[in-house]
Each structure stands twice: as C-alpha cells, then as structure tokens.
Length: 289
Image (cartoon, rainbow, N blue to C red; front, side, top):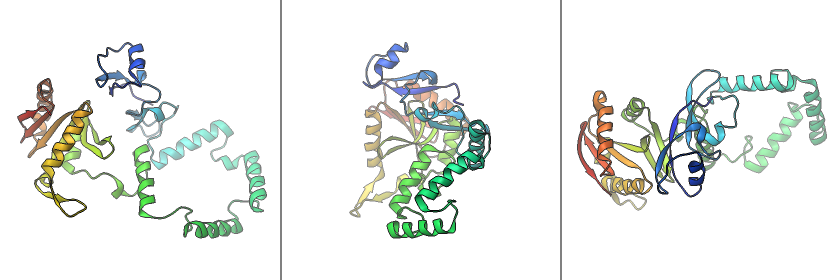
C-alpha cells in the first residue's frame, strides 16, 4: 500500500501542465513544489513510501512501479513467496502454479516439443542446458560471470528492491554517523541526484552532506595526481545548486538533540544563501553559489 504523503517535485517542461491542472501554484520552470502522492504523474519516478502488505514494513519504491501493484511486497524473499502464493490461489486455485493439472499438462507439451522430454527437471534437459550455457557463456549459470555484469545486475536489484539478496559491497558506502543522521531526520540515504552526483542525505529539497574525517585527506585520480576533496565538494555543491537544491554541510561533531532545530534555522538562511556550513552543531556561514 502506498502511504499518504507529500513529496517534493521539481517542475520541468514535461510536467508543468499536469500540476497546473491539479491546481498547484507554479511560477517558473525549475521551481520545487510539495505534491500529494495521489497527484503525481503516472510516469513519475520519484521514490514514495509504501508499507508491505505482509510484514507491515515501510520501504521506498519508484511511484511509476508502485502504482501498478494492488498488493505491495517489500522485496524480502518470504514476503515475495507469500505474494506469489496469494496470486496463484486467486488465479489458479493452488499455491504453486505447477500443481494445476491444466498448466502442468501445457508445460509438459511445451517441453516435449522443444526438448523431447516431459519434465523440465529431467536429467537430459539439465545436462543439455548446462552444455549450452558452458558453450555460450563459459559457465553453467547462463550469463557472463564478469565483475561488470555482476555489478550492473546488483545495482539494478538495489535500485528496485530494498531487501534484494545481493552482494553487500555493491551498495554505496555510508558511515554509521551518516546513517544515524538520516534516521534522525527521516531522510533518504545516498540519493542519486544526477549521474555520478550522489547526496549523502536528502530531506525535502535540502541536501545534507556529512563531512567526516575523510574530507581532510587528499584523493588520487586516475593519473595518480592528488585532488583536494574541498575542491571536489565545491564543484558538486555548484551542481546541486544548479539543479535547484539547497545544501548543508555538517562538519565535526553532531548534537542530535539540537539537529532538527539547526535544520529549521538553516531553512530561514536559505532565503538568501544556497550552501550553509554547520561546524560542531553551530551554523557558521553560508554561501550563494
């Protein structure tokens, strides 16, 4: 089930007419507005909060995918199995589709026609399938088992399912402090803004970057030249501002008791500034990039 909520939408030429017809006040293309989830465009790819109809866990999924589902699963394997059983019972009257005699007979005819056997689990079929996969891909899996292919597959799974069974290292790394800040503010962790530009935490139309000890170091590029992370952060901030976002950098220690009040204080400063630095939980300065 998609929960009732408001999401922040950036106005573009492709959606301005839709939201004007819905009664929203829009001044310019590039503005951001808060929209009720029921008013989103059918093709909108923003992630919305849903609740699993089986384990009652809340999760995020792209709206254009979630809107088509009458029953929602969080992606956990147990929940997916329950959804599959429920669908099979509704359509065929059995928990497993192959238990339906009509479907089993149809599948048997198809395998008999294609492979000369009556069952897809037949030893001859398995042997022939393995031989074909080894010939085409060099392994029994049936796809190229390279790091590039695996990485692409895992990224797709993590993009569409929060509880996908994938390799952990494919996830974008996040520090424990970054995760705690995100949970405290009920934000979105590691949101991709544009291509390789990824925000640590997103709350509404605000990007919050947590600058830990790693930001004091230098990074090397492909030619082994040292790159100052401060310069890289400035370049990224300019890109975020260009896309209509406001940016807060949390530097040093974070006081969770006053964190929310600090964010509210920053919202007032955003009327004249685009980027704000917060050092040791104290608002220190702002920039208008």
